[in-house]
Image (cartoon, rainbow, N blue to C red):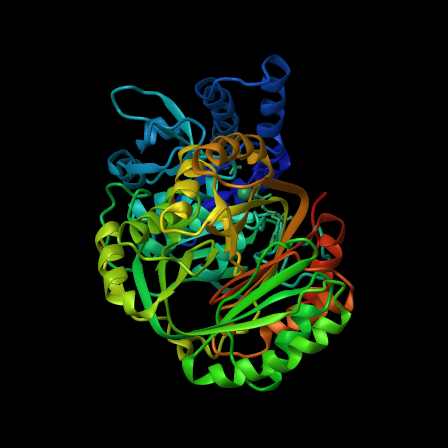
Length: 600
Ligand code: ADP
Ligand code: ASP
Ligand code: MG
């Protein structure tokens, strides 16, 4: 007999009829010979309604009282579903997070799960009961009995954590769409269902606003090898499998607090090309990378930083033996860019052969803002200067002098308590589609800090200060240009933050600017991030060029670019965002004729 954990989201238990339909599906699973643990969310939009009630009383309610309030939503649905099962003659019992023994950190409103005690669950399963567990909630410790919640959308995480703790054979996430789609169907109705997606791809997509699956649920599935499926509670269609390579053995104690970083990756075979002072208008990146992919040169990292005046810098890396070719293509294109530029200064090409890439990788980097800062600090303490930074959801890559390779590996492995792993082997993913999905995050803001003294430790101090306030940043990009101001060489750094964090970010940075002698802090809210994700883009020249070209054709200007091996992200203006998403989705052949039915 196998054990299945099923999770039903808010819409799936939104009405009495829906709860009865869920009860029938659960009963059918039992009749098919399985033991079932069910995790449910609050009915419909209950959680939003509770948030609004709190806001009506206090603009800044205490996080403890918010957890007390929000956890009630799930308690309603577990009782009702349990009753519905009993009405069908199916033995069932509802349990809150505390009753199950879902022990979390004492962090109200964003607690991570430490441990789940399976004894009581096993006892009820042995009695032949279906157990209906309240998702999204836990308890801070068995002694204190403080109710905690896991953060919005956290029921997915409860379900996968239960599946890991009980070593379940399968975890099914039932929701209101047929599974994971190529993009958000509310924005692009032609989005198509994916049969399969890797955990790494899902992690890169999930935190970008593809909120169909809580990123922490994917992290647990990947770490503990939970078989995970996302499917519709309205049909019997198989949905989407979320797959991962076999995990390394891990302890179930400290379940969500396992190491944030899995590995340190070092790649000495990198060379950098930078093109400085190019015009800030649509089509430039498309032209450059179009030409480069024409010459069959595969680019690895690409960054484009904020404009200074009205010009941009683009930098990218290639394998060393391709440097001459990449340089000549870039040199050839530079004069053409200059002609159209209103800038009197000339576009300039800089190449650097003696560089290497060092990266930290791990699903746990998401939502832990201190990790990137710790990497920068570790390199700074070892007196290693960072020439280029490119971050994604699950990876932070830095370009350094290749002579510092061994020193950097040793320092980072020690700091994160992990071993070095070889860089990603492209041939493993050659059979996968270069672009699996496209995501849009409308809730980002762009931050630029001007004139940061160019010496080791500055990035570390800036991002540590933000991490201390729990502010997650991404797309960290350091400008390629260096200017001497008051006898000090200086660079700009740009990155993005969540819109909600603008106020705190400004306060932190303005204080820091005085202390460290930084220049102006510029924050732009009117931006959005559009990204393509696919494991098959590794070793597949031309994917980024196609992305940039599609935006150029739509006359959409790219304000920032950052990449990881399996993702390319661009910052565009908010006004262009949905148009950008649609055209990219279409360009990569992801749109189908069929329109996915999305409940209102
Ligand atoms: P639940 O209440 O079941 O947890 P959510 O609202 O959290 O459901 O997540 C499902 C919703 O996620 C879908 O209704 C859909 O609008 C949205 N969504 C955004 N991006 C995607 C995507 N790439 N694939 C599927 N659904 C997506
Ligand atoms: N009810 C919670 C929320 O709306 C948790 C969840 O649905 O996953 O965020
Ligand atoms: Mg959800």
